Length: 68
Length: 422
Image (tube, rainbow over all chains, first blue to last red; front, side, top):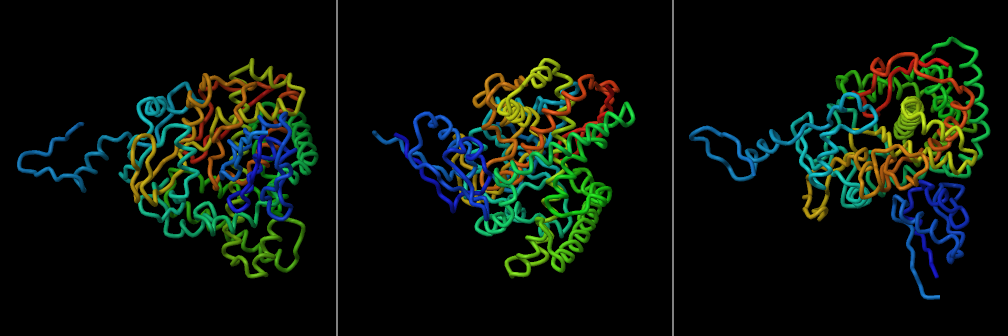
């Protein structure tokens, strides 16, 4: 089970997470800041969610590998 | 440990000015020149520094000796660390070149730290959000198609930089900002001066001043008659008291210059790199899925890393990194070009391989200052790379590669001209 949290204060709106996995991340219309769509994404998306967390330049995505 | 001859009777002071003079004399000069015959690779001596150590003292034009951060992981850590500053007046900040007194007031948010950096950057992030950029894609495709039509109907051979590589991003950023493209000769001529390294401080200030004056006039027009563009949105912020007019103009200067020079270089230099790697060009032409082309663009960004004189930061508090402590008041030069060739981060890093996953590259930098315009740059390059070479299948150089003038003297690497034929 993968739990995702985002920190909108840290986010710099690079959009990298949306490119990596648009099913899980979006951006606010007014300023491009991250919006979390899925706190517990389906397992098929986990690899791309991990990539999103790795490439986020502002370290605004935190992942928690929780037991199911 | 190396010592220098000080001559008889000259006491060797521990630390202090004497030691730093010795360090300055020994440290390799940075930036370095590219190795002859290898126009797409970082200079060989620079690559060797990465093999030697994660942190190496280098000497800049002004004899200061900041740390060169050679490795991918450390570069990401430090660029993402709030204990480093992007403010050029911070003690130890490694200067790119001699700048006039105006310089530090005119870099907008890229020369600020949070929270003010974030406050100003967030005012201009919305137009670069992924969905907004995707909505622009059909228009950019049409524009690129039109420019290729013109290219094929025009003189042959032709300079691809003037005929295609510059007009694409320039037309797009002008439209986004609300700058009349008819004025492009004026601001391109001036921005070319601004981003050259070997230009006298005064000449650079004058060129930047001309662009600022021009954009100030435009902001004035948008204040009076707002339109659906980014300059009008900035004018609104000025009206609302969130930005001074001066800050709005500085931001506009940054976006205008950053918005066309970099992408233009990726188009022209990228084309040259592909022509020199025909098997990769063939692979790119054969790609049918947008995701494949997107991946190819990431690899081109990694391989070429055109911002090639290092991102610069000053250390605000002591930081332990790479088995060393960098001290408050010291400077950091983060060489993303060799970071993107770090074998720890990319297998067989000197090979251009458009099918590899290169998405984690640092060509746009890292940390909160990572390039704001990257979604736009990516989309433009995806459109260009998937259109130009298919529609001009016979594209080739019209001169020997030795005759191509490279931008070795620029903050951003590329080619000044690319004579092509088909």
